Image 1 (spheres, one colour):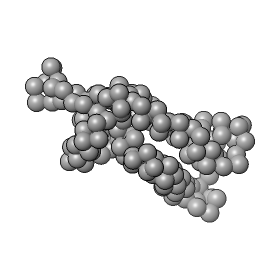
Image 2 (image 1 turned 135 degrees about the horizontal axis):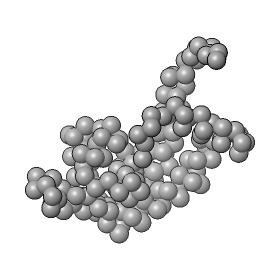
Image 3 (image 1 turned 90 degrees about the horizontal axis):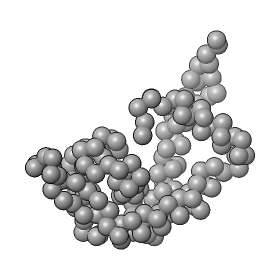
Length: 147
């Protein structure tokens, strides 16, 4: 099997992936800002709702953020009335996070914006087949331990 150099196309693959990530983050922030959300806040709400992650430590690990940032994020989301926290019955030192009705409603609005605005801009003029190919290739790059 012939392996291409990561620089064979002129731009290192890691840099291309990084640039695509930055583009996605800019789009997310642009379209979530009118809803009063940041991409980081959206990701925490999505982790709680879609991946059923209720522990701050679990969300920190999943999103690769530190505990201090997570604590500040939880406080912002609590002040906005988007989440609630309760004592963890299995760990008296820990808490469990859940979306409020307001948080669930806002997450739905965010997902609508993702589907109607961010997604199409990320896809650009790629055909359906090209999007499927790109998705399949990116999935192959990811480690097996993904939610």
